[in-house]
Amino acid sequence: MEQITTWLSENALDWGIQIAIAIAIFIVGKLVARMISNLIEKAMRRSKTDDMLVGFIGNIIYGILLVAVVLAALDTLGVNVTSLLAILGAAGLAVGLALKDSLGNFAAGVMIIIFRPFKIGDFITAGGTSGVVDEIGLFSTMMHTGDNQRVIVPNSSIIGGNIINTSALPTRRVDLVFGISYNDNIGQARDIVLAVMAADERILKDPAPAVAVGELADSSVNLNVRPWVNTGDYWPVRADLLETIKVKFDDAGISIPYPQQDVYMHEVKSEA
Image 1 (cartoon, rainbow, N blue to C red):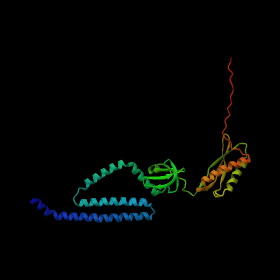
Image 2: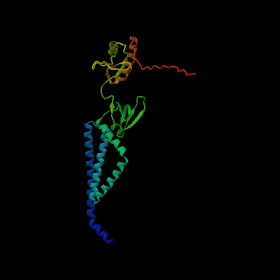
Image 3: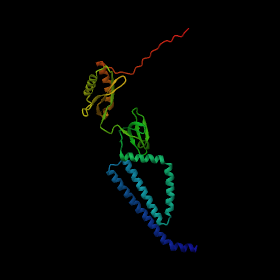
Image 4: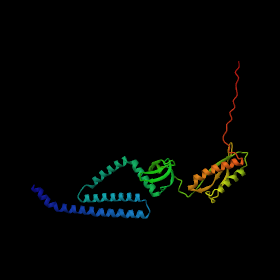
């Protein structure tokens, strides 16, 4: 007991100094870590980075710096930091392997937020789904389809394939094909189509709409009809053109051929 008392009296001052230094390192380091993370968040906001990503990255940076501060404080107290780092590394590897799919979705979510291939409200085709984007999360993107179904798509599925953003550009071209009979007048059919498109105010004058023979098919002469419209008018204009041109062709006596098959039957008389 006397030896313990002697040892404590000889080392109490050193231990007190080490503990005080460790506490000071922790307090000052924590303040510096918060300052650094706040500066990074401000810089990201000035560059108009998504608020959700700003907060998430800011918290990650603060957490990493705080771990470094704690390790520095423990090292001051004589704790074997190398062994502790090895344990933390092994634990991190195990967690990473267990959550590899989630981490992949998170990395894809960060890429989507940074590079912005689409935004909320855009109509896209990605991850095997077509729909309007409702929400972009760090792990998944939520969309609703044309028949108002909610679809949740993992971000890794979106980044791992092609992304078609229908809403990205202000104008779109409507691609239609009308087949007429070989006996019909191509010039007359072209004039009818051009007149229908000229009468529709939603069809843009520049670029000018085009009508051209696209193919001499087996049973029809196919006309390619290519008007340009504002992106929001694409589907209404397409539907109206199909109906109006069909009606105008009928009025002018221009037929739209369809595949036909003639079946001939003959009776085989059996010999009596």
